[in-house]
Image (cartoon, rainbow, N blue to C red; front, side):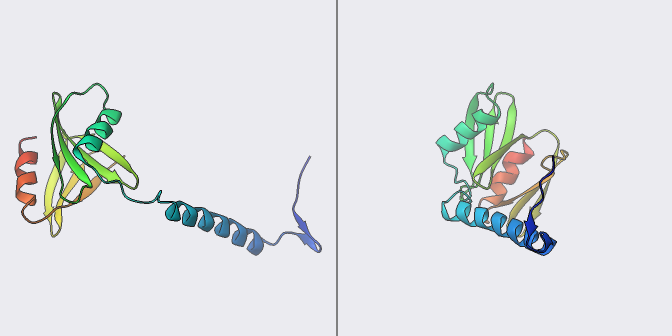
Length: 139
């Protein structure tokens, strides 16, 4: 049994199908944006702790250093340091074990040797960057 969408003169033209698909996807994106679901996550000490424990429930968090913009946090645990950062409305957490650190004009770039999150750029204030570099050097 086969279903075919037909106009009066034959099958639906590809151009019309593309317009419907693009229009539908665009409408969903606009609705998500207007409902606030595209807002970047803002971290506080409490939300950073909760987010880290969601990623690594077996850890005990000892200390958290938040970036001033609230979009990243260095997390100290009994298993070692980790980095938590906002990715859209959610967060990503990585243990700091195998990475390369470099300074950028706006903060720091961390390159993980992990294809799932190969690089993260942290926007830090000029006075924050040395503090983060010092903490990351101990990792």
